[in-house]
Length: 99
Image (cartoon, rainbow, N blue to C red; front, side, top):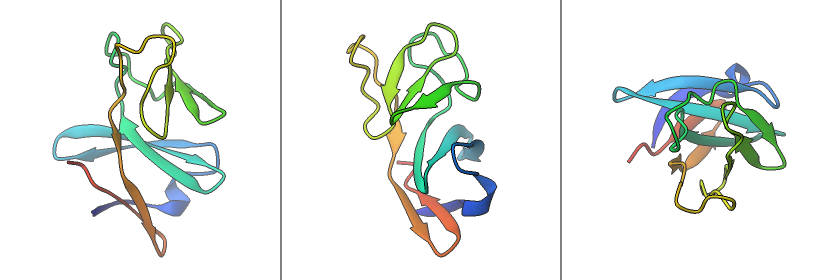
C-alpha cells in the first residue's frame, strides 16, 4: 500500500485524480468510504473525472455504462470491467495497492 492523497483532498461525494507509476487513478469519496479505480472507461477510454457517482456506481459520462466502485463490474455490459484498487485509510492518508 502506498499513500496517494490526504482524506481532506477528496471531499464527500467528490473525486480526485492521482498519478501512480504513470497511471491515472480516480479516488472517489462516498460518505467517508474511499474507492479507487482507473480513470478511463474500459468501453472507449473516456476519462471518468466527469462521471456521475450514485448508489455505489460510477457512470461513464459518454455512454452511461455503470460500474460498481466495489468490484468494477458492469451489470449491463459484463464484457467490460473497470479496474479497481484496494484502498486503506491510515490516519488522514489514503493508501492504495496499485498492483
